[in-house]
Length: 257
Image (tube, rainbow, N blue to C red; front, side, top):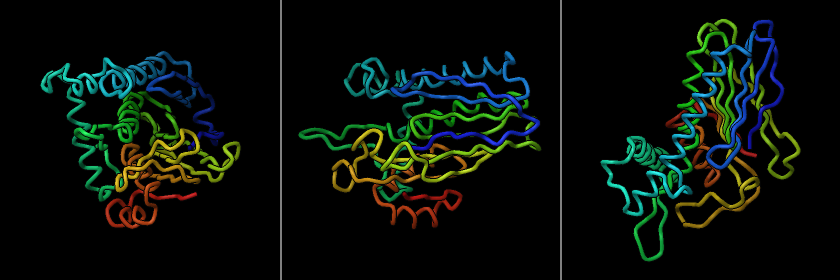
C-alpha cells in the first residue's frame, strides 16, 4: 500500500485541510494545500469529489445489490437502461487486458456458467482519477486523493509556477509499520498492489488462482487508472510487466518490493 507522508511546505501553500469519507468499502482521504484552505470553494469541490465516488459505487459496485452492474448481471436491468459508465468501464477493461497481454483481466471463470465481470481492479483508479478533475478547477491549490493504497496528486489553476511536492511513502509489505520507499510528485499517480492489506484478492488470470505471496508492486505515472492496472499486472508477473511497460507505456515506472 502507498500512503501520504509529510509534504514539503512552500510559502505559496502554508496551510492544509483534510477531508475523509468511507466510500467504496474503504477510507478515501483528500488533502488540500492552499494559502487559505478554509475557502468555501475548496469545501464545495471536496463535496463534488465524494459525490462522484458515491455515484460510481451506486453504478459499479460488486457488493451493492442495487448497483447497475449487479442488477444487469442478475437480469434485473437491461443494458440500454444501465448508466453509460458501465459500457465505458467495460471497454477500458478490454483495453487493459489487451495492453497487459492478459495479465490484467476483469472476467473471472465461474464453475458451470459464464465468466463473471468484475471490474474492481480498474474501477477504483478510474473513479479517483475522474473525481480529481473537480479539484483542478479550483484556483491556487495543490491536492492529493488517497484510496486504498492508490494516490493521485495535482494542482488547481494558478499553481503552474508553484508546484508543491508531495512525498508518498510505500509501505513495507512485510512490516506495514515501516516505509520501504518514498516517491515525490507534484502531479501524477501512485498505485500499489499486494496481498499484505487485503489478503489474496488478486487472481492470476492465467491459472485462476489467488496470489498470496509476500511483497508488493508499485507503479508511478501520469494517470491513476493505468498506474492501478499496471500495478495489478505487475503483482501477477513483475518481469513480464516491466518489459511491457518499457515497450508500451514508458511514462510509467515500476517499483517491486
